Length: 151
Image 1 (cartoon, rainbow, N blue to C red):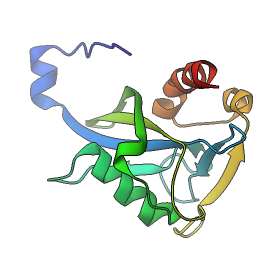
Image 2: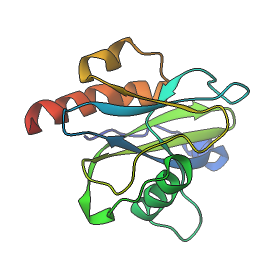
Image 3: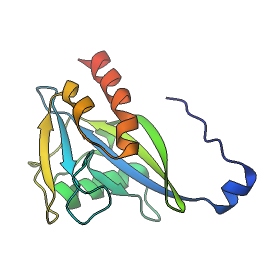
């Protein structure tokens, strides 16, 4: 997926990027795991691909493994994930850059480990009907095309 970031020189000096990774976990039946944002958080009640921020010194794959372990208690093999695409979205004074990865194999059973978070397995076609944060919403089509070519 090729996408250009069209920032003027002045905007790029002021823009602080927030790099976030997310996993589209796909089960044996082709369903996708989504996490609902808890009350009191940004985008509360919306459904998203689980993941989180990339910390200093981490690769995106390392960050995804750490975040999925912290958020839903599973372990992934960074070699077993596929890069799907990215979305960028203004987020206050920052620019959120969301990297989405597909993952079909993991160890453990996904369970919400953060207070108020909910998980749900959903059929691919229902992704289009769920309320999602803007960056996640932008990546639904990328995921659906990937699933159509790998089914």
